[in-house]
Length: 284
Length: 271
Image 1 (cartoon, chains in turn red, brown):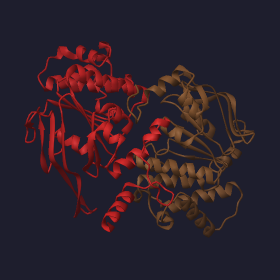
Image 2: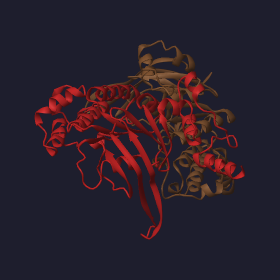
Image 3: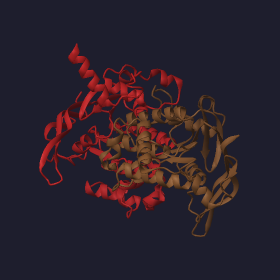
Image 4: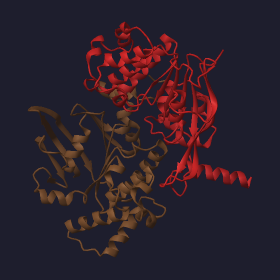
């Protein structure tokens, strides 16, 4: 079956300049990333800040041009000005992604108009995200964080996308609100046959939402596989350290976290760990 | 006797002429050297409780409607402002959440720590030479496991990583050997690996220095890792309290059960 999303050899290099504008180096924000997402599934991209996960999202959305590599939606390359309406994005902070001076209805209408869709769909879209249709006349500041994120989801769904890129969609929300938004996303995914690229640093959430996971470190996918396998039997040192660092709430979870060696009585950093591994390799 | 005890604290806020009660009788206590957590979702009142303890509530709009806050047996709410200031940052100190907004960007870390120490010494009537202050600053930087204390002291905040800045804030709180440390969501702004290091550091420090710790957070995982006893807040009240382990494994209140059920598990499955 053709993957809903296929990324191959994706690379983005940003120049590093001195305070006076002189080029002093480069940073490979995304370094030869390849992944495939089957239709109707959830692919989780896990990584810390600076790992390159948001740069990948921006390249899929056409907001940043890749230096190398290809991005295909349902087999069609979307680089070079192709129609991207089949992919939409839900951002991390709904307070910032919704225009404060537009009502909820107006915000959704802008998306509908831009793609020549019927404005009459606004009530249906609100119903889809389980909001009262009367919310069309409200302003973002009148809504709670969870309600705002539902509006952002409705707006993303307005143009009938096949793929949604979710960039930390619940990290600004309280845990009880997060649970309901995730349930909504799961429900919509099943009903509409949506494919999700779910970007998050929250590994516990990733475990419960994504069927496949890719762990990003410094622009590279260091480990990928079915989420259950990666979490129960992590192979890469970085994945192990990441899992060992998650604050958990039960003894069962604690038992499954990998053990990490302390360095001088302290938890190692990713750099410590990888330096140690390189040293062991060169000695072997 | 408890080091800190809050008894039936009630606080209201008045905005646009409307009075809202935000703390409706909060009671909690922290024995000497004990680790306690105050946990709740946004709007539950945990930060207002913390600010009331530290004396940082803006009054007005805030108003203490009733209750007592006893620190070493003295009621902070009736203490003259002078005495209260003398306690703050000395006997009780605070670690804030966002290191960048708690540090002055145009002063070196060493300058900031030395200045804070100077004022703390003055309040406590202690005499310390400038060389003595520098020695103490390097000592606390080493206590928070900075590998090169001299270099950190000479750095501006922007030159340090997020994790190191958070360590500087902890060092700042430790400067005048407090007996109670109040930590407000420490490490929440950081990556999970760095957060784990900061939490481990806090745990090690409270044991080494026999500090009492009040951890204020919304993250139940952080609670489990840092506090043996937990107070859970919702809508201005403590809805449930108890040993952290039993609170998580056998919650009595429906609110607690729902909250714990909403937390995604690393083992998957649940929910």
